[in-house]
Length: 474
Image 1 (cartoon, rainbow, N blue to C red):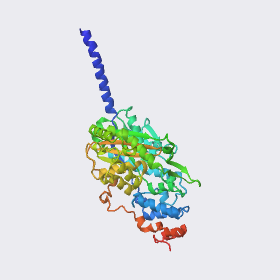
Image 2 (cartoon, rainbow, N blue to C red; image 1 turned 180 degrees about the vertical axis):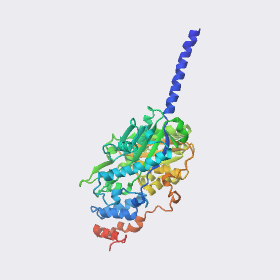
Image 3 (cartoon, rainbow, N blue to C red; image 1 turned 180 degrees about the horizontal axis):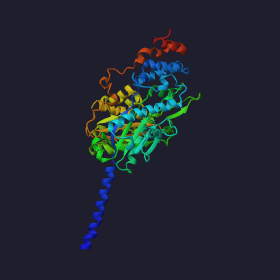
Image 4 (tube, rainbow, N blue to C red; image 1 turned 90 degrees about the vertical axis):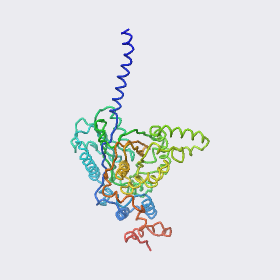
């Protein structure tokens, strides 16, 4: 009888041990955000209207048609008067960037954000177990991770990763890597640094799809500190709930819609094709089809299924992801939305597809206006705005949406662990946001460039008029 009881209890005991092991493993796999620090350059690197005009004047390859294109892009971009440019461009050396310029740009962003990060958290650089650096367009040897390790004298067994070519989505790619490493290493700290190298990659030609980058991208970046140590949960800001990655690189259209190339004169730049909007929409749709099952309540999913069956004869394009398509209400499971601050039309387009209103899109629009398109670091300026405005409350959920070269769409959801109210990088200007108007002063001064009657005017005459303060030629 005792033997029979022992044989019956043994499987039950093994099952309990296995379940306990799974619970402990799950606890160690949590990814907590302890702190983040966004980069803000010095005031002498601000790119206001005057500075933009001076940089445009230096490009002797541009004609009247290119000036018109630049005006239209700048006016409609959503960028304000206080974004920051790379040091060598501000100094007029964009034609001959040096390795020293490129390294200085990286070192400045690294030191400013990491010094503040370590100081804020009280965690020494020597305690960092994992380091991931994401810079798409600059990959020197030794690597940028090695440069940080050398500067801060980090431990010899640190797990270091240097990511390149990930584009604006690189930040979430790096976080996904950290989350997977957390499954192997227990009670560790990880630092992610996301930024972009602009100085050596300033486009000096006249091809319109490649000029776009000069109009939109600005200096910026962010350093983040993560841990899977359950004992530090009380100090954490956010907990990663899920992350979903979608890659359309197997499609030639997807691979080539956002790519670094050289024009026929040998000027290197980043080209955005006309198909990028279609590719991005497809990637977002595919990604959200997976993500919504992880974050929306069952009642909302059931409501959607019922409504879809009633509308099964509706055309396929009316069944795409978004408020006007599937009828899915993302706000049933999410409170905040970090839309990538890439360009005004993109923010509006993504917002419309997700069924968001002006309140939801305000953080992305304001981040774009104040700091410009800061590539992979942009989402954290958006998050910083939400925190500075005291929007983030305990148990709220935040959707982060990102797009990157490849072509990729990577989205994740965070859970807010406590009420957040740090003004962070917005400290000196949050009271001025949102401004009463987002109209770009460039339009007020140079709207005459769009006058069709100027078709006979030479580019030299146009630039002479620009030099005297925006008065039209003639």
